[in-house]
Length: 508
Image 1 (cartoon, helix red, strand yellow):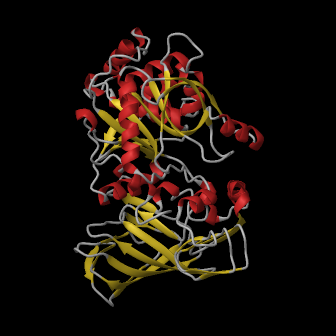
Image 2 (cartoon, helix red, strand yellow):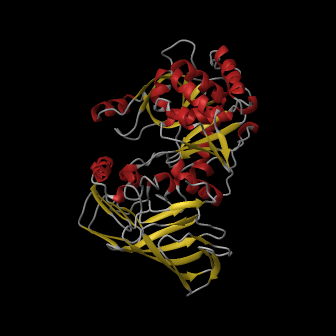
Image 3 (cartoon, helix red, strand yellow):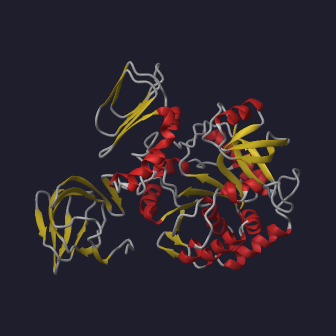
């Protein structure tokens, strides 16, 4: 897509002030493109969610990750003949391989936009909107964070269908959730005039309020929670942003114009994107709707579909089925005399006796115990762990790679043991290490090994030794996963002791 075609779409939206009347809905003639924002860190769900494997990639509620559930949410949607286009997924560079693998597992083809740096949700949406305007096709975009939960998909799709009708005429539409309690963890939308179809004009957005104010909002019946899900024309977003945030608009459009495709990924121009101010969709645009002449009308549509943003362990507890004592659990958990508690076990048995309002989360290398009323403080806890340089703040023991994964089983001062699984067709980079030697023992599958000038196959119960400073590569030429045990020994065992000479996945 060229910058010129984007500018033409923006000029068209700007010329009409991106505003039209409530009357004259067309019948689904404009394509709808899901835009999934998958660049968050989700530190409040530590220890399951970590910097290198955040909450949108984990299975917090069921067998699917939150990302997978999000992209499947529009499956079968075809309201009034409106077709759903190829989804656009915006993620960070460090998560691109896992993101594409999870989409592949769901049979979803998507355009993956790789952010060179984190700049919050407004620049991420701007990149996606510019792409959605390609070739003059001014699509309606459905903006969805990748880390939300929806219980009633049919009700969700019905709300999107209504929102799309308002978006088609030029409105910027937010999905608002009628509140069930006074919650200080959400932003609120004050309802303006009611329209003819349960929608309201937006009077104003309110950031997360204090508890007393939140209670007043809920009692007034004039406020809905801001779900963070939006529906709007791509050109309307760009025209509105150009008027309200010109520096962000210029930086993102330049980054898009300078971008290039890399396999299944689109990479925006790095320096241009880094020059963009960082801001959220709410702060950059939504809070200005209605306050200035000549910008888009703000509309809020009700969403009653069992929505949750899963922003904390308390929200996860709230979304899960509970026993007669109000306890929720996943994995191997036993409660005895416990009430209103949540426990998540990945492997070991968790036994909770006589506790109330407690959260316990167990992973391979960390255990969280918290008061359920204070789970928002987990984010501060992770910040403190980073200051202490605790690796558990950033990575799991099990680390995903584009070729498979490795699990650090044991380590000491001069040794480390890993379990390595290579997917069929997977290929590690051609590399060497200056400070460690490696011994590989095949457990199952077939390994194709490059060691110096040699190339040979290893099968089950066979092994090889890679001396310090020798170039080597491991591949799986078979149709089944390759599993092996790697024993490292040497004076330094850090992951940065890798010199890559060739890499199938384009890593440095």
